[in-house]
Length: 487
Image (cartoon, rainbow, N blue to C red; front, side):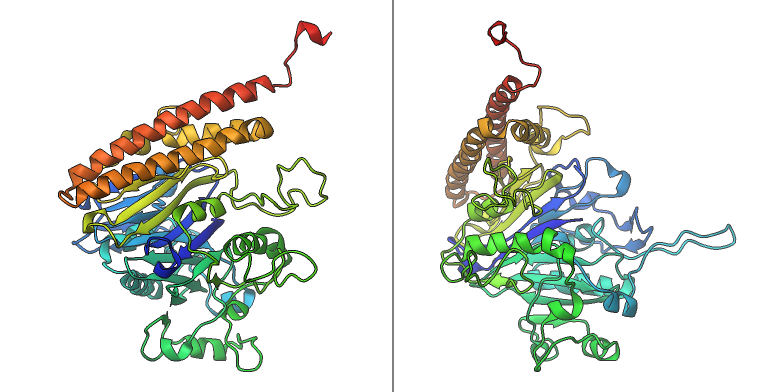
C-alpha cells in the first residue's frame, strides 16, 4: 500500500518526545479509531488474504488501532499505541529488485488446483502485522525482535517497512525478500523521511553481528548477500538501498520527489535543494534517509509534511501559474488516503498520559490532525462508530467530504482549510495541556476518556463549521450556475 513515513528521534523534537507517523494510502479505505480490549484480541488468528493461521499468546495488552470498517479483506489495523506506551505503524510498502526477490521469493498464497490438493498459505502482510505484534511488546526494540521471529517463520508476501517507538527509542525495520530483514535504531537527533522505497542508506554490519546496540538483521544476511552476488557497492561501502532497493524511472516520479520535499522543509539551510547548485533534486537517488533538522520539529511540522502537495514549488497541482511542471510528481497528501497518524510518546508527563495519537482521516491536504490520549478503554463515537455509508456524524466522513468539496473549489476554499487545521491543532493542544495537568493528580482511564470526548466534540464542531463553508463555496462554483444578469 503506497504510503509516506516520517520518524523523529527524541532529541530532534521540541518536547523530547519520539514520533512515528505514516499516511495509510489505500483506495479510499473507510477507517475508524478504536481501543482494542485484550479480551477481544484473537488467540487464534487467520489472515483473510494469505489464509495463514497463527496461534497468539495469552497475555495481550490493550492497544489502539485504525482498522478498516469493512472487514471483508481483513483487519488492517494500520497503527496504534499499546498500554505499555509503545507505538507501531505498519506498513510502508517499499521497493525491491529482481535479484533479491529471486534469491528469497515472497511467500504468496497458492490456491489448490484440484480437490486432491491443499491450499498453501501465504506469509504475513500489512493486513496482519499490527495485530500480531503490538499487543505483545513493551519496547520498540522488542517490536523488531517479535516481528523478525514471525517473518523468519512464516515469511511475507510483500516488501514492507515497519516503525516502532517508545519513550526513548525509534526503530525502523525493512523486509528483504520473503524472509530476510534489517532494522536500525533512528539516531536521537535525526528525522527519517521515507517514501515507498527501500530507504536505509547506511548500516553497521559489525554492530548487527556484534553488540547489536543500534543495528539488527537476519542471522544469515552476510551469507545471503555474498551467495547471491547482491552487493553493488564500491570501495568497501555498505549502502543497503543500493543492494536491496530499486532505482527505477517510476521512483523518480512517484517516490524520490516526496523525500525531496520533506528534506527541503527539514533542512533548508544546511543543504541546497533548489537551483543550479542543488545538492538534491526531486529525482535524485541519493536523498538522505535521515537528516538533522535545522530546527527541532513538533507534531505540526510532521502534519505539514504529510499534507504536502508541493506547495511553494513549480510542481504544485493547485498552482494558478503555468509552470510547465504542475502536477508532475505524486503528492504526499493524496486523495485516497484512509487514515494518517502520528504516534507520539512523551516523556515530560505522567506515565498514563505519555501516549498521544494525532489522527487525520482522508486526504491530509484538507484534513485536520486531532490529538487523542491512548490510555483508554474506548474511543469516542465520533471517531469509532464509522459506517461504510457517507455521513456527517463521524470524523472520517466529515473529513472526506471537506476534502472533495475543497478540491473542487480550491482557490475559494483553501483559506477555510488553513483556519480549520489551525483551530483543531490549537484547541486540541489546549485540551491536552488541561488534562496533562489533571493527570498529575489522577491518571486513570476515565480521565483520559473524558478528555477524548472533549477533543472529539471540539473536532465535530470545527469540522461541521468548515464543511458548511466549503460546501457554500463549492456550490457557488457549480457549472450550472446562472443569473438573470448573465444574459
